[in-house]
Structure formats: structure tokens, C-alpha cells
Image (cartoon, rainbow, N blue to C red):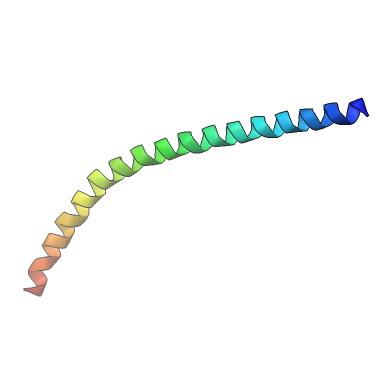
Length: 60
């Protein structure tokens, strides 16, 4: 009976550790994507606006 309790406790600790690692990975990925989004937004949006303004002259 004592072994079943120990195995259950070890599984609970194992799943808890896995959840902590997954949450840390999600947080790091989210921070990485926020930084990447800012870099892409600043460069590509300016390029897109420039090209869009160039196309605007064809429709006037």
C-alpha cells in the first residue's frame, strides 16, 4: 500500500515539473515573439507604406 502512495506522489511531482517547464518555455517564446514583432513591424510596415504610397499615384 505504501508503494502506491509513493508512486502517486512521484507522478504528481513529475507532472508538476513538466508543467513548470512548459510554462517557462511559453513565457520565453512569447517574449521572443513580442521582440520579433516589433522589429518586423518597424521595418516592413515602413516598406509597405512606401510601396503603397507609390501605387497611390496610379489611381489618382
